[in-house]
Image (cartoon, rainbow, N blue to C red; front, top):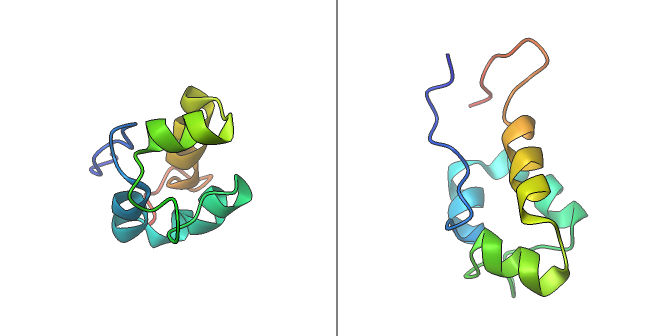
Length: 73
């Protein structure tokens, strides 16, 4: 079972990458980075970049799980 805390819209980009560095390519694919966007919450970053917040959180969450359902650490 997945024992990781969920990706929440209130987490900053810095927090997400600190906890799950493997998610950096997903964030970068949406133009989100640690330089200017790091202190922004996912909600703020999505708003500023015109992204669908729910879709972004779902994509980040999905990227944590392999096809077999094992959690990537």
